[in-house]
Image (cartoon, rainbow, N blue to C red; front, side, top):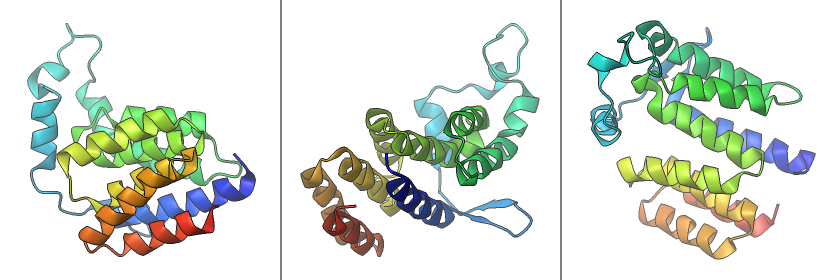
Length: 184
């Protein structure tokens, strides 16, 4: 991936991440309301909070690890913004943030970005489709999926996502169409 393409991608994803949640000047994340997404995600993934911290289940996160999800997420963001971006470390941070069920959407969005930026389009597509299965009207995830399709060369699928964004009356429709039309 060229440096220019990486820069464009970083700017787009960071702008989109800010539409999912707000980052205050002190670096604190303030979530926007997502309805019952967290409880639905937990049901779908069969996440059992009571068993997650039990010592007899060594593969599940401790309460301390889950509480650090927000910190890991912010660490992942800073690693993406580093010069040069440190995608391997950011991927690990976002995966660690997934231990906190409250960070499901943000951490997966970060992972999707990392996978897109590193050319792992299949993984990025899988993540954005998973997020869309929980929130089918999420314009941010439709935009991100359209960007994945664009960067992997599937212009028809990217245009379909742009059409979906137009149906949702999202301002992101124009951004995706501009990206597709620019060919960069």
